Amino acid sequence: MADIGVTGLAVMGSNLARNFARNGYTVAVHNRSNSKTQALIEAHGSDGEFVPSESTADFVASLKAPRTVIIMVKAGGPTDAVIEDLAAHMEPGDIIVDGGNAHFPDTIRREKSLRDRGFHFVGTGVSGGEEGALNGPSIMPGGTREAYETLGPMLEKISAKVDGVPCSTYIGPDGAGHYVKMVHNGIEYADMQLIAEAYDLLRSALGLSAAQVGKIFEEWNTGDLESYLIEITADVLQHVDAETGKAFVDVVLDQAEQKGTGRWTVQSALDLGVPITGIAEATFARALSGSVPQREAARAADLAAETAGWDVKDAAAFIEDVRRALYASKVVAYSQGFDQIAAASLENDWNIDRGACARIWRGGCIIRARFLNRITEAYERDAELALLISDPYFASAVGDGVSSWRRVVAGAALNGIPVPAFSSSLAYYDGVRAERLPAALIQAQRDFFGAHTYQRVDKGGVYHTEWSADRSETQQS
Ligand code: NBP
Image 1: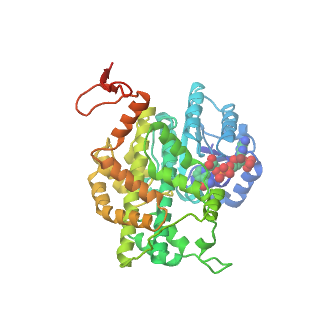
Image 2 (image 1 turned 90 degrees about the vertical axis):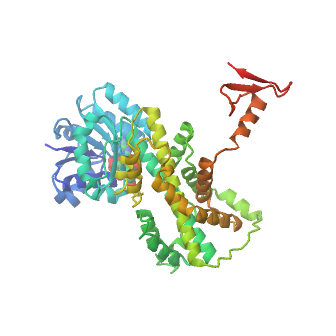
Image 3 (image 1 turned 135 degrees about the vertical axis):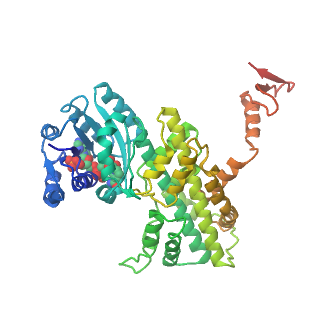
């Protein structure tokens, strides 16, 4: 009998099934069209013990109780179809796991409906793409603790390990796992945008080639910024296009696409009222790059630039400024993402441990990075930490970079280089640390035109001023 089943054997499912088999589990495998099942067994049957089935009934019958099945199909309608098919053959107490990129409200809905029918439903984020699925992904499972007792040890075994610690842990009930995966992807958007802005600044200000900037990133990857994304950036920038002999990055169309997780992250942040400006700017920057008619219209109108012209006297100092600005902006983007997780956790009663999230992102996933250790340590110091950048380590790390950050953002503005993620992160930093914000004026305006009321700094209560009459102030009940 099989320990675990995987249905949906496209790239992610087949690699995950192989990972389970290589780790000593007997894996039941199934796919809607049997050709993929056969292809997996023919090409990789020697990886371990597989039990292939053509029908769902045989697939379910080949599993040990409680039967545990991971679904790795296209998110949305296909996932619902597969769940219904499985549920018709499984029994109460069995565990149905969705490892696809589901939107968390779908996971909440599915979990409730399957719980009502006696099943355990686990919505789990799986990060790391096809290579991670095969060699060790970062896994973010949400569902019942009871289901995690059966499923968890298997997920931990196949996950990436950092210092021997698995990159998989119980995240929380129903949609918690998919939510954390969604924010992970949002942070990935911000991280990529910040790297792209740093690259743009270095090329524009110093007139460097892509390969020269690649070398700088290689150097950065030996310090605080060490991460998978910096590493691949160094590699990509030094890659030469075989056809033209030009830098590869120079022959790629500059329109960034997106599959939707960045947008979902921003939508949820708007609902929760959490300012995730880094992720939002990164998402909008992709949208701007793809706004072809608007970009053409702007160029046709020859919109004025009035730039000052870069005059970098000390290239090494400028590079160090950009590095510090990148690190500070990155810390802010992560801080905002963790704020969002905390707010969603509170709203949904998920009780998510943010330190554990940072711990399981250290390996296997796209945003794996050295500094995630520091985030785990910060939340270990204070599990209720209201603001990551107020932790002593991050306060000092960001503080050390503030003057560099200001020089870089000011230089970019003077020279017409768009750095939305760098500049919005700096604006957030200045906003969140400000003693007093101009929000007071906004409250006064709202009361003026809409009688929306305001509170005072010098006494309690809620007030309204009779703006169009005698301007007397009345306390509201
Ligand atoms: P795809 O997202 O391309 O989905 C293909 C699979 O879905 C095939 O097995 C296909 O079966 C099955 N399928 C479809 Br389409 N409609 C179905 C239906 N109505 N009933 C049953 N099966 C159906 O595969 P993937 O790229 O391996 O990704 C799998 C999941 O993992 C997705 O949710 C994805 O978002 C997520 N994910 C992907 C990555 C990545 O890097 N690719 C990373 C992390 C998570 P067929 O063979 O019969 O057509």
